[in-house]
Image (tube, rainbow, N blue to C red; front, side, top):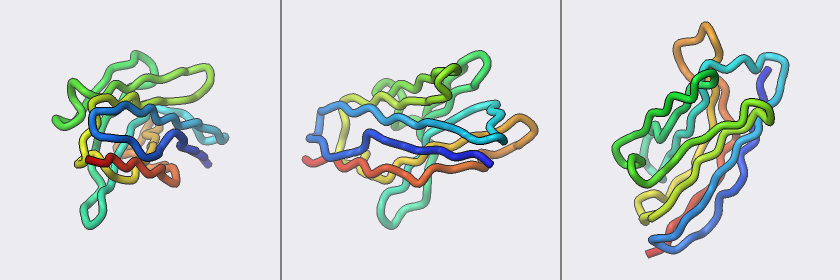
Length: 119
């Protein structure tokens, strides 16, 4: 199994910054990539950003591009999402996820951390 624990969520004013972190553990942890997704109230979960584990290739949603930065620490088995210039529409529960080698989708998920951006 893979365990993912997110931290760093909270309440921030519009224009502010926040960094989310995710720590991974478990015998089945063999990542090809890790990513961040979010789900706002009444909306479907959506992709935010991802990073490949070996080479660090990054991918972002259009809403995250230019404002968010994803990083990873292969030794500590962590992935972080550095968010700046936050907007009220960024309010959501943010989830960390892992796609293992041999899998086509992100299949392990954390419990989520709430990010609330006030206007």
